[in-house]
Image 1 (cartoon, rainbow, N blue to C red):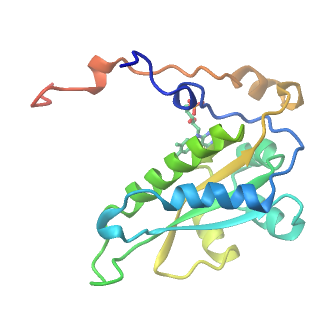
Image 2 (cartoon, rainbow, N blue to C red):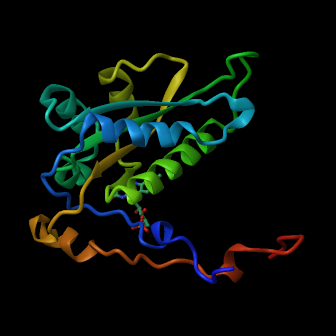
Length: 188
Ligand SMILES: Cc1cc2nc3c(=O)[nH]c(=O)nc-3n(C[C@H](O)[C@H](O)[C@H](O)COP(=O)(O)O)c2cc1C
């Protein structure tokens, strides 16, 4: 038994500098397929994806316009932008699906690891305007935006403004295991 975690997990990080290299429709579909293989509550598969490749200027710019200014600065250089959505209620019962966002997260975890195996990186974003996204992306009322994601190949960090250049690092700090794990009960 190996003493280390999978290299694609160890090496994953969230860059803001993306190269100008595009991502083919076929490769993008592999990413969506990996996302769709995730587990979900009652196999509801509540995830949906509205996306645009940079070549598709009109749709890409519409996605960019939903982001906060901070994210627009760098995310506009990604090869692909994706808005992830969650279906609010279960198809069968119409009851609220309290785990829909959880399951979108599982799907995106799958996507990020599939991407790593293809030398492609993801940068998730909470910095977007939800109401604007609902209107501009024509999202039906039974769905809600969860996140935006910038996808692309690694670029040169020199292209970033100075403040972002300093933040660009493959090694963000992580909490120790004894801070996040508890045997039996959590307590204080
Ligand atoms: C749901 C979610 C929302 C995030 N929102 C933003 C964002 O709006 N802008 C940004 O620059 N980074 C955003 N991040 C990236 C995190 O800051 C980053 O994942 C974290 O610092 C850990 O770094 P790492 O992914 O490189 O390991 C987000 C990440 C997640 C998972």
